[in-house]
View 1: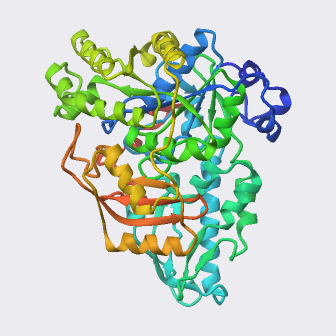
View 2: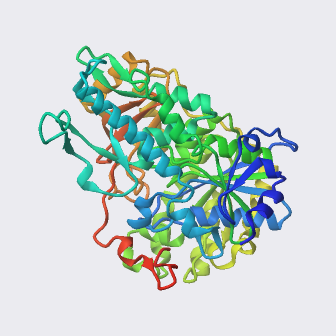
Length: 544
């Protein structure tokens, strides 16, 4: 690794623009965030994907390899990525720093605690939760109805046993008994609003308008009513500054905030992306999971709120993912199967359509594995090009930046020859039900949406509390275009079921919970954690 000072210097940052967090990590200072641009704004490129397998298709690895490839072509590039959550690190997917020759460094530090940002989000969230229960215990001056409290505690660990619980047991001096629940930190509203905050003042405003519950008369009670926004801002003061690290080839990376894409926004912070646009020729940002989740939210919510104009989108696919959607079992995905690849291609086709629906040119990047056959690769390349998308094979894991030069050239050519006409697919002023139906029909390919009575009640309550004309954050499975993880490839003839709609007033959007999605994941039968440890020298082992 390069000393972080060299990485900062490669971006034109001065000593006063960043603060070291050890030898290889840094945080930008407020001066670095606010520094005026001394170059034309960067071309902003989104990296998204087809509907992934449970192991993922390598978006982060491709994002980093692409940034490295662009740097090799003489373009100053910066990757803007989310911070890994400990939930997936110790759950199913393992680390979230890329891999092989296209990885963020220092990888172990980034995967484990990093610079404390996610812990700060957890602490702020739970301080507010403690203040709520203390207010109940101390006489409840806000009139908050303990049966109508909506604020959850959070934890950056997968733990299904915390989805439903009872607090305050043990007698009159131990609190007020009530039902409650936990979410994972990456799904919390504090994580979301910290991702969208543009300054400390904006952060304080957003924290103050968090709705924690309602009175008996259904009047909303906010964090401001509890007098907590100042303390919460203090806990998050350092966390809202982006972190600077590097790839395995020394290319700069801004890593900041980490909302999940299946139950939250799935994007890095507005502050980090805005900073990258000022510093680079090309800024690469990644949205979690497929174009139906992180991609849709980036185009409909993040880019619109951030004032961004994405120039192109890279759609990551693998032959293994296509075989999965073609009906091959997980333990056989490594074996070539042209028939399964052809059967899975309609999934890729729908994601190409999704990107083009937003007016953004698309390029399909095939994340190549050693067992991929030329016949299968040619079939995917031809399929993408027949549908008007660019296409290239990338080898970020095994080769690094050199393995992504073809992708980088294809991307630059696409940006030059196919101007983006980016536009969201709905207007904020549309009714909430209509916005949800638009996403379901146009992006998922659903026949329509079925709203549970509780969801319609949620929408009416949100509108009565000020939640009109807001964007939608859909929460659904990432394993299917539908809300049923068993429907693979490109399903048809299905409807989306919305059971609840949450009003995140601080973040400034409505969350529609579709299917069986919940905000606290569980661990798998064999968690990644059982393979992780340290050796006799204190070095990490088993974390991939």
